[in-house]
Structure formats: C-alpha cells, structure tokens
Image (cartoon, rainbow, N blue to C red; front, side):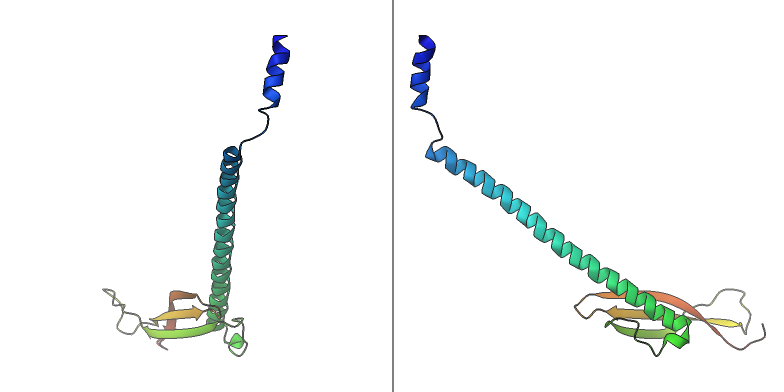
Length: 133
C-alpha cells in the first residue's frame, strides 16, 4: 500500500521543470559552440598547411630551375611569384689559396603565393672561377 501511494505522488511530479530544460539547452548549446569553433580552427589550420606545402613545392621547382637551366623557360611555380636575389658570400678562410677554383655565392629565393603567404630559402651556390682544378 505504501508503494502505490508513493507511485501516485510521483505521477504528478514526473517530467522536467522549465529551469531544468533551459539549463540542459544551455549546456548543449555551449558544447555545440565549442565543437563548431574547433571545426573552424581546423579548417583555418588546413588552409595554412596547404599554402605552406604549395610554397615549398614552388621553392623546390625554383631551386631545380637553378640547378638545371633547361627548366628556366617553364612555369613550374604553379602561379607563385619567384624572386631570386644573389650576393657575394662573405668567405675568407685562413690559409686559402690566393686563386681558389670556386667562389661561394649567397642566394635567396623568395616565393610568394597567389593567395598570400611567403617562404624564403637561403642557400649557397659555388661558382667556378676558371682557375686550374
């Protein structure tokens, strides 16, 4: 008898109150907002990585054109702008011969992507001086 009285009392109190439903809705909304923000951050990071890969591939194509001049006439950059700067490399080792066979030259390849982003590659190229080898 006691159980049936308890069940009768509970039937009138079943369900959620308006406050409980609003709290549950607020918690769900906060969770979905965090998931959405994470998704947008992931998309932005993917675009940065894609741009970086494109710039690295363009830099490789530009450096390959330096090594093999036959590629100089082809547009291997895929739309990126390649800018090459060269300058004498400051190199004065002690005990070096007065007429070395090679002189170092500093090269800087600047690759700018069509949608933004830039990568700079610094390297050294040895130029033959024409001295006896």
